[in-house]
Image (cartoon, rainbow over all chains, first blue to last red; front, side, top):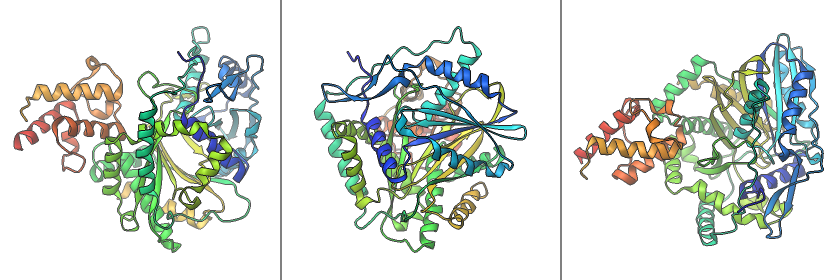
Length: 427
Length: 85
């Protein structure tokens, strides 16, 4: 019987990404979730309620430690005080400055201080943006949405809210043969993915590296058109492969423009790996990966190849095998693991990362009593590649976030990508 | 392969209940699949399970949105394809 909250291989990988990002850009593997609300949020009661809510979750008192069996686990220091979240308030004059303001916010938090959650409230006229910054050490994208959703339920009825008591997780130090077989399968796949020469990707460049974001929001009418187009071109319910294919098309055009035509694009795609009974898990990382390789010839029209690769990976249960395989990596210390990951495919790793979160799991349509008009994610993907595209659907509206290092893409490049992606409803 | 429509429908209900971690009793065979919570990945899981159960690879077929829209319509469509083999 497990008595500790052991970390999974995916959690360990996330810690390695965190370490890589710290080394390369001075900030960890974090992400923001932005809630756009109508009205002005009263900060003091918001801060008070948020801190009360956090104090009920002793997971915030934790840090990584190694058990005697060598598996890493989340060690709770019962005597430690949970660092209260101090909400900063900001005002902006122009709504168009908001996204670049978020990039500035993301620079200021020190991830080494064991803070796992931060919050900023940005106001513009009668609109507010609640920008939550989450550390991937403790949350994945869906988990963070569940957390804010749970916070809203707690606020509505503090007396009857039940804080989760379950905190153990198995060490997975068994079924070694199965893990080795999964490892062999995954390694073969990774060798197949690794192009002969170099992953077709933008070069990271030199100079001070900071993350920038570009968000494209589609209204309900445009989103409906995109879904209709996906139904027609990819097939019923196959919106994820459709979106990935359009994003690949946009990047292919950009890479062509820059004369980068070598070999294949490689795209890791995060997938939700919550199993039965864990559907609403808030803490730690319940995700896995699928990988897509698109040759130069396939990249212009990649739909068939993406659908076939998605089908084959689902059939072979690749994402389960990947999760199982990385369990073996937990023995490797984080600095060494991050160095090893950096060696993959001569350091290029991937062309860009992609994630389609689907319909939001934040059930409420209100945040702190104010109508939430939109919700989108601004993640900091691992470096390399330092570039990711993230899509979510909030209340029938698709949001596209391109998250990129300033040394990878200039304003012209971003404009080029945005123009192509904005065409999606009109195909 | 000999199948009747009820057999196909029961098999699909079982698969969807497993994929979505919901009770079979709560599944309405006339409800659109997307409103049950199926997304791209879980839908492809369903296609894989159809291949395993009925030996039919549907990812690249010309089946329309209407064919796939409910368990009922999908069952009828699968029956036609199986009978045609």
